[in-house]
Image (cartoon, rainbow, N blue to C red):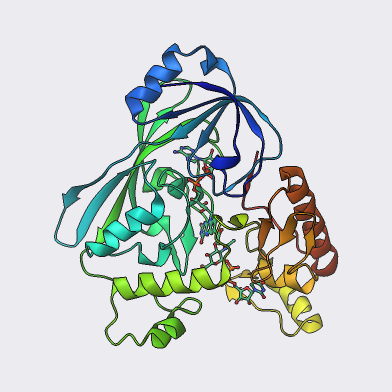
Length: 338
Ligand code: FAD
Ligand code: EPU
C-alpha cells in the first residue's frame, strides 16, 4: 500500500472540488486497513474515510490522512424460505450491487437504482429514494474501530436509522470504518410504485407485467431526466434535507401560499419539499461564477467547473437564509461538509 502526499482530491469527490489531502491511501481489506493503522506513521493524524465521494463538500485542504475504502466482493451468505442475505464489501459501487441483485431476482433494492457512491456509506446515510430506505432491507454491518482497532457487528437496532441519519453520523461519528454490509432481500417481490412518478413512468414504458427489473428501469429513467450526471456537472445530489414542519405552522403557510406541497409525516408534522421552497425563493437555475442551483431540480447545488467548496457553501448559506426569511423554515444540509 502506497501512501501518497499532498494530492488533489478532485477525482475523488463528485462535486469536483479541488482541495488537497496531506496523506492519501486506499485499502482493499480489513486486514490491510488494520496493518495500515498499526504501522504507518500517519496513523496518528486526523482521518477521513472516503467512499465514492458523492455526499461530501470539501471546503478546505485536509491536513490529515484520507483512507479510501476499496473493499470488494458480493456474496450470498444465507437463504431461508422467504429471504436471501447478500453481503457486499464497503467499496463495492452501490448501483453495481443493485444491478447484480435485480438481475438475480433478489427483490428490495430496485427503487434505490442509480444512487451514486459505495456500499459503505449506504447505512451511514440510510440512503433512500422512491419510498425505500436502507433500513427496510438492512440485516447487519461489519465495522472496524479506528482507534481501538477492534471489529464489531451492528444489527438493525444498533444503527439508530432515521431520515438520512444513523448512529454513525451522530453518536459514533468518525469512530468506525464500515467494512461490509449484509442486506436481507426478498425472494417474492413486494412492489413499491406509489411514490413520485414511478406509476406514470411504468405506463409510459408500456409495462404490462410488473417486475423489479421494470421498476429499476423506471427509477433510472426518472432520475436521469432530472438529476445532473456528476460526470458532466459536479454535484452531490440533494444538498438539503426535506424539512418536517409543524402542522400549525404549515396551516399558516398554506393560507399564505395555497400551492405549497406537503407529504404526510407523523401526527404533528408534514414533510415539505425543500426543492419547492428554494424554487419559490427564486434560486432555481441561479448561477454565480461556477457555483449554481440546478435548473431542473432546485434542491441540487452544482459546480459547473471551477467553483470552490467555499463558494458552494456560501451559496448554500444564502439559500438557507432566504428560505428562513420567506417561510420561517430552517433547512438542514444533507451533504457532509468537510
Ligand atoms: P462518501 O461521499 O464517500 O462519504 C459520505 C460520508 O460517509 C462521509 O462522511 C464519509 O466519511 C462517510 N463514509 C463513507 N464510507 C464510509 C465507510 N465505509 N465507513 C465509515 N464512513 C464512511 N442519496 C440518497 O440517499 N438518495 C438519493 O436518491 C441520492 N441521489 C443522489 C444523486 C446524485 C446525482 C448524487 C451525486 C448523490 C446522490 N445521493 C443520494 C447522495 C449519495 O449518493 C449517497 O449519500 C451515497 O450513499 C454516498 O456514498 P459515497 O460512497 O459516495 O460516500
Ligand atoms: N420540487 C419543486 N421544485 C424543484 C424540485 C422539487 O417544486 O426544483 C418539489 C415538487 O413538488 C416535487 C417535490 O419537490 O414534487 C419532490 O421532488 P423530487 O421527487 O425530485 O424529490 P426531492 O424531495 O427533491 C427526495 C430525496 C432524493 C430522492 C428523491 C426521490 C431528499 C433530501 N432528497 O428529493 O434523494 O432521490 O426524493 O425519492 O430527501 C439525495 O438524497 O441526494 C437525493 C437525491
